[in-house]
Amino acid sequence: MAFTATDVKNLREMTGVGMMDCKKALSATDGDMDKAVEWLREKGMAASVKKAGRVAAEGMAYAAVIDGVGVVVEVNAETDFVGKNEKFVDFVKGVAATVVKNQPADLDALMECKYEGTDLTVTQQQQEMVLVIGENIKVRRFSCFTEGVSVPYVHAGGKIGVLVNLETSLSAEQVQEVGKDIAMQIAALNPRFWDKSQVSQDVLDEEKKVMMGQMENDPKMANKPEQVREKIVMGKLNKFYSENCLLQQEFVRSDVFEGAVEAYIAHMAKELGGSITFKSAIRFEKGEGIEKKQENFADEIASLVKG
Image 1 (cartoon, one colour):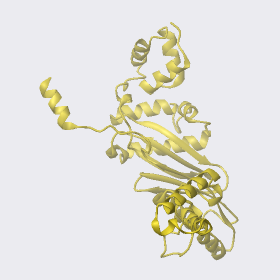
Image 2 (tube, rainbow, N blue to C red; image 1 turned 90 degrees about the vertical axis):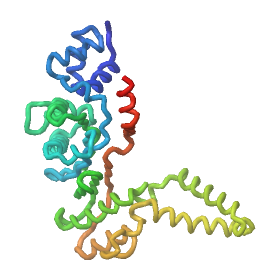
Image 3 (tube, one colour; image 1 turned 180 degrees about the vertical axis):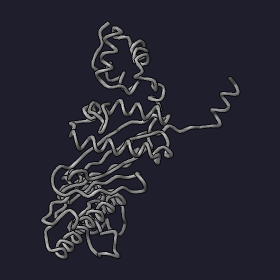
Image 4 (cartoon, one colour; image 1 turned 120 degrees about the horizontal axis):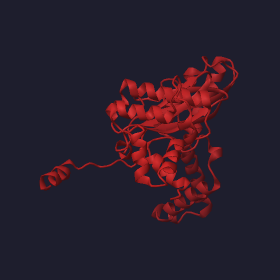
């Protein structure tokens, strides 16, 4: 029986085993999915196949700078408790180190890389962790900056990982505080855009439409000339920028500086005697976008009693 690339992908998702081993298993079993799972189990590669189907939405988002390269990763587990496990945290850090060393193109490529400091692939090391910890564990995503100066920030023990990338004439040590302050702002407010120049015309048109509609439905505003309403809308758009764009946001640490983030960066550059430009950032929040299974223990116990 023939098999497709989709079958290989599905087998990998079921078992957590590497793509090449899944392909071998399907080849050895004429494309029979159930037999392929059994084949992998017999080879000792899929001992944790049952755990692979469980929802992993906890875990850790982690950011670091390793050998000058900024890296941020998210690795998921089933419970928040495991996210604090020392072995799990070490595994996450090892994944980050593997990303920096190998610069993989995507997640599939990362999973086939040799896990840093071992002869195992990341997939195999992940499987080892599943067996040791007893929960489904999954490397979910990664990103990195290879140029400029990166500053990492991990919030609440791994709930959020932020990596800020700066272009500067100063040393990495000199801009650490600035980078961390910006990262904390990103962690707290999660801006939609970095700068108002990134806001597309479509977004602006939609915002204008909503604002004009609101005024038309407001008895106090409805009778005002359209030219006046247009001016009011422009004023409201400035508020939109200050709420949604990082560099135009009010700097949250008012104890340090009062003004917008871009003004804070310019102020610090002047204080330090160099140039600092915000280039980009990455923000990973653990479990975002993953639908968590809602357990109803009362129903579960009732079904067991009936059984």
